[in-house]
Image 1: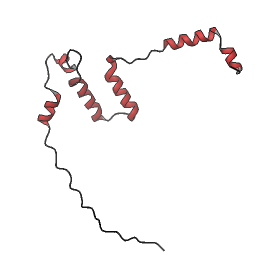
Image 2: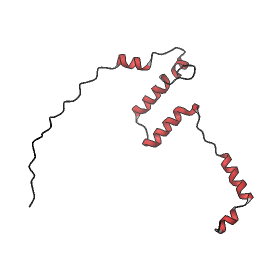
Image 3: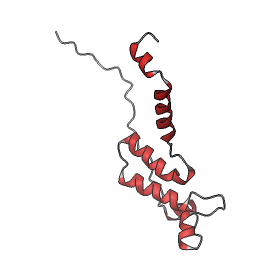
Length: 116
């Protein structure tokens, strides 16, 4: 309170001005914006999303995420229920390859070479 600017700006006029601007700020976080907020968060966090990640997010949004009535975005758009996303993936995904063979560890002591 000893700062001279505090005395000048601590008035009802400046407080009303600050309150007016604070009330104009509106945070836009709603369930309607869920996917856009998720994409935006990822974009800022990772400095951009890769093409594959964007495609994956779009597929999950359209075919997996449901509303309260149990319908997906694709179902509402195409007017019929598409196959279950993960059942489709399991039936169309090739068998996974065998894990790589690791080289056996060499447990023999290594000689240290000293530079003189």
